Image (cartoon, rainbow over all chains, first blue to last red; front, side):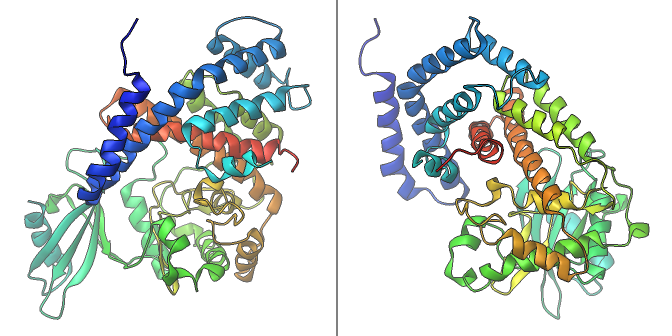
Length: 123
Length: 328
């Protein structure tokens, strides 16, 4: 068993230090790079919090849609092939809902401030 | 120092120039750089931009038109009265600066967030879409006989290029597959009219002032093909920077864009434009994935590149909004 603090707590502490103490004293291009770096740390904390549940429900939906078992990568590969061949399309029950839910779960980690995501979240 | 070569070079094309000052690199990957500098002259300094592939780098790879073609196109646009910087000099081997060209520096803003939010552009924003429509029409009307050698692309060819690149990543993305399938099913076929296509007409490549568009930059992706491609690309949601209800660059409507285009004597085809908007959305998504690949394989192992990989999902939600919209 690993000791405390958790990865999330460590990353948050570093991100908060960079945000609150370092950002005010960095200018120019390095200021931009610092912002990107802080965004990356924030993304990692979101992924640590959300990915496990998102991956589990994605896998469950994929198994139902495909009637098959496998890793998340194998299932996504299988679905991609069926969409490419036309065997599965937007008239297939559950496909649109699956793609929407999977994409919304990804945006919650990647870019929760993206305007399209915020709009769809309100629906 | 680059100022030494530039000083020798400017004396050859700007009579009376005594040197250069303030040379600074604005951007640069491994193979292409942009520099700003001032030409020193007794009558007053002149702002200039150098765009070059440094010595040792050959022709541009892949889709790029090449710096010589870029210079020719920029000059053609300038001569036609379109907002385009004057090309001052095309580099020669004896300049010792590599391949490329020097153009007049145009003052103004290229950063979308400023153009969309700052007060000084508030007056021009409602007029920009129409103005850009006229500018795009002017580009499409440039004389075919004077164009440099360019790649010729059709919708079918571009779909297959995108599919090949996406498959090379070997990372399954069902939403991208859905978009590829949609594009193949809705391929409008060869355009009845084939013109010069700028290929990257969007925020970042447009210099805007409080008076409107002052210059169109970056002809790197220029080719010949369906003129509706440029109208679709500028409507891609990724270039709206949060202003998602204003499809043209976050500042205007398609109707205004088309009206400006038609004022200049050309005809817009909204269905084809929509096809190219879907293609453009997928293309930006594939480009995001490509940047993540280059981050992994180096030499540009930067955080910025890595993080752009996590923007591919933005294009997935935009593709779903286009192809599988949900009820309100």
